[in-house]
Amino acid sequence: MKRRTFGVFAAGGMLGVAGVAKSALAAPVASALPAGLTPFGAEQAGNAAGTIPAWTGGMTSVPAGFDWDPEKTLPPDFFAKDAMLYEVNAGNLEKYTHLLSDGVIHLIQKSGFAVQVYPSHRPHAMPEWVYKNIAENLTRAKLDPHGGRFGFSGGYGGAPFPVPDTSQPFNAGPQIVWNHETAWSGHYSTKVLSAWVVQSGDAPVMSSYGKDRFLSPYYNPNGSPHDFDGYIYKFAGKTYGPATKVGDQTCYFASINTLKKPNIAWQLLAGQGRVRKAPEIAYDTPSSFVDGISNYDETNGFSGALNEYNWKCIGKKEILVPYNNNKLFHVSVHDAMGPKFINPDFVRWEWHRVCVVEATLHQGQRNVMARRRLYVDEDTWTVTVFDEWDARGNLYHTGMNTFAIFPNLPGVIRQNNFLYNVQTGDYVMQGSWGNPPLNQPYTFKPFPDSVVEPQAMAAAAAY
Image 1 (cartoon, rainbow, N blue to C red):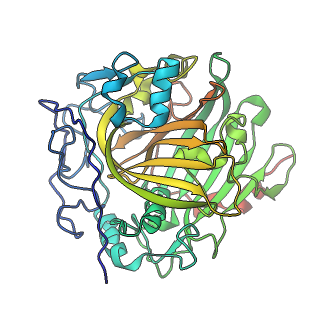
Image 2 (tube, rainbow, N blue to C red):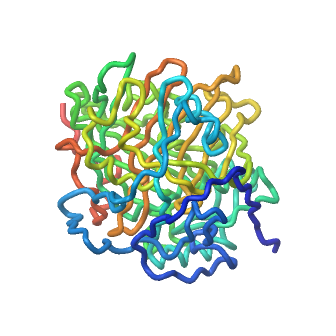
């Protein structure tokens, strides 16, 4: 069997940063993957310039000096003592364009956005049983023979393609995106999340707020590919605000192979007393959670079925991305969300390696986003920043995910998702903030699996 390899596209004009601070890290974990890779498939070594550190095990316990009770509060900013290294703004942008996405460059040039850069840390870690699954996925996970855009089989309990086949860029592309779709965030999780919109430079307005529960059959520690039901996760969300949406509920199942099991959504609208299938909660349908400013498939950079696009791996690159942003958990929405963009003072950017994937519409398919480019973090296999173009080739939307560290999970997982419409100036945020009651801790405790089934919504329906 031919072993998959990954060619590294190093960024030019590297800037050395002296004295890069070290994270509070556990002992290194031996990898069952090819030499030089972490247990999840990233390059273990740092870069030559010292701007990216080596991965040495990740943050698997709360660092000394922090008194944090995960049952009571969201996690603290573990790197709060780091000093900012430099800021990228309109005055010095030309020096750093090779480290930024097109969308971020546009925000800096046209809107006055700035990127505040801090020392890089690589605190991502996962349980040993996940590492074991990832190593086994190396040989058992396979793309659907009809095309990777439809799904995969054989993978379970970790990144299905830890070493993407870059000898075949149109195979590596969907492999990387399926890694993103299956990114680790625990077997069970419960979160209070909210969505906010800024239009015409006005103050942020809440468009939805509620409690979301996620069950990931794919990450059942007692499961296997043989008894897996084919769903990456099952989601159930109940809306608590604003007043016009109180009581609305949504249930969604995300599949690893849409030819065998399609993604399914159900919705209960308050007052109707009836659960209905909601096939429109997919693709480029404007999302009701953010007043239609972004589409359902733009959540978290990309979400849902891959079948509308041909996905090509462009290569690997070193860029600046939002990372280790626990600070955002302790900031109010109105302090953080400015009239044009999120306040740069509250977003930490670091130098990391990413896999660059470009999507173009498959023949006969339609989507308002004719082309997409995703920058996928090599450690978490999660989209960091992303750009999207319309059918005329004009930049349309750009966005970013921020990442938070949960050593109690352990893991570095998606925190907040921002999306900017560069043609109108409007933008949206979905995630977690420091405002009560939005600042409730994430929990990773089990709950009855029936909670995320549509029957539970039907049982709770009221007129």
